[in-house]
Image (cartoon, rainbow, N blue to C red):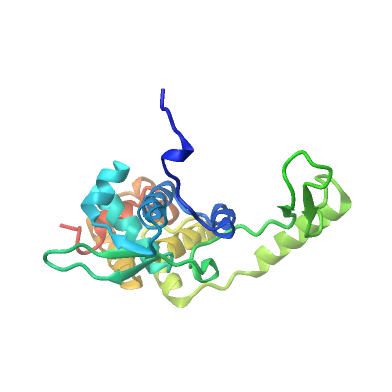
Length: 235
């Protein structure tokens, strides 16, 4: 049984930052990397620290390629900052960008937010700061769902580079889901890499019946099979 005692040390992090992080759609690896960065920066009352890839692997137990990929995503999305690049003898110095409004990570924006004002259990332990969400089944909620569906149907315009990819892919299916996955992939890969992966997959599967090909949505999906066909990985 772990014997955790507060007097043995703790990490000081601004409440505002901790309260806003859960709204961002970080994946599990990204959150674990952030926890390590918190520990070795704010945990020692400093804004940045030397953190090598090898050390992050040891601290999280995550595979090297996964650590590299997700750390690069955090840096690219302006969540983690590189104070100093690595040299032949020293690792990179990393820090956290505290201005969460500049993070390029999707986040939820709940319509009904309660902000604690006093200790839990008091008569006035929270204050409502936004309009209530219409209860499920109400006429207002039903109308809002209809409006959302209309908005989705009207939003049919896609970027030209995505349209080119979708037209080129040998089994284009689920256009909106494909586009959502496309946007996620662009946080790590360039348009040119995704187009090259599409071309390589098309060449590799030439002559294969369509029903045995991956759909465009699955090709760019969570398991990222397209990575095997990116030029630097494809043989």
